[in-house]
Image (tube, one colour):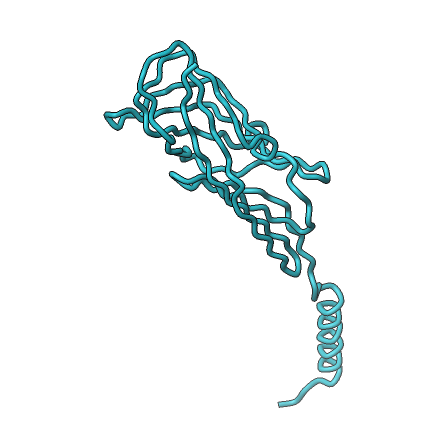
Length: 191
């Protein structure tokens, strides 16, 4: 079997040029950028856990929850709507939030509220000015009441308290992870 020297040299040159172009144009080190995000996990019967992931150590200045629906659990284990008025609660600014109701709500042991997600609904503001959508489960958050209310009145208030909680910071080579867990307690007050 005879080889044509010109073809061997030509194929060799093409092979070297192809290898050089792969080495030059194929990136060997790519940079990945992490978009900051904040998610809110609902811990049923306890409270919430917020997880922030970002490349830089920016602090949260506001965490606004949009609450379109609040329900209460009665003695028959049925959930009853007590408010369909849209409510807002900034967890970072208000450790205590009071919602007023004009209807009679008695004999309830639990409250649950739904949190709307999306940047135009529930969101987080960071100290650098960025506003991020708050990732929230569609499952409502259930809060045990400290003492069930028994009795009638014309006005009721639902008072929610956010406890101090715990915070953990993890610093990785290309990411900062902050996890905070807080207990939420609730009570219904008669006015």
